[in-house]
Figure 1: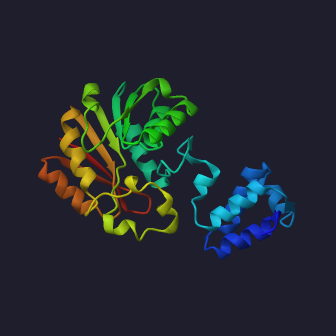
Figure 2: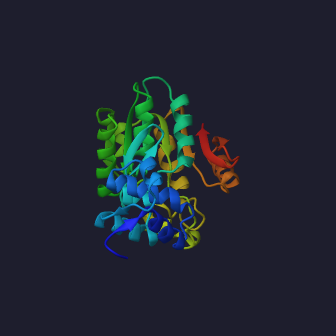
Figure 3: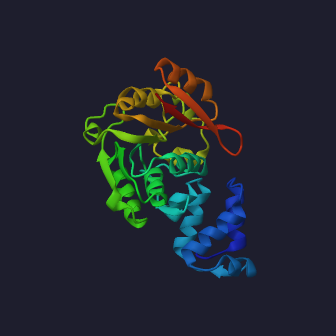
Length: 276
């Protein structure tokens, strides 16, 4: 590749690398790196950009490195989140969990967000519900630094406490109990399936994807350790995989819990709500 590039060339490079929406991604990268409007890019697709940062970004995306990591941020609900290789990239599927939480959390509640990652669940929920406060935990201190940045960026840091804690073996969060609501998008992909994920996911933190042999390790641990931290009328809400509805219903039954499954807009099971 030369020391300059056009939009047309960028599209070709990304398309050759197997990027399904190469034109959109090329425009987004050029617009972000070069600070030009999307309209101007389309208006002159053969304009030459002499920008080494842009060239490097296109090269990197052609390796299937995630677009969101290249851009450094992603939109989620009405917020914008910084993302790094220490955080899972927030996805639209998770917005359903936040949508349910925002409309069902009681007034002036205190909630917990387990495996918080970028903080997208806790931060966006707090942003939409200014009457509540939250505790958010993660096992990685560098991940918590990103979550702290995002809490400040979105104006909710005064209502969010971040804890370094192992969700499977918690030793700090009980100090803040009881909670009205507990939310979590834990790792839920079976270990054997992680290796077969699309190329982009291989760059995301393995620890945030691998849910153990059957994908249920974190659900079992959270139900065991955290149901006792809920208020009597509280609820625990998980994001789940599209094929985990039956497993979640059985798991809830074994713990004498009620379980409501909420489907996403594609009619796939997406959120499990557990109550006593």
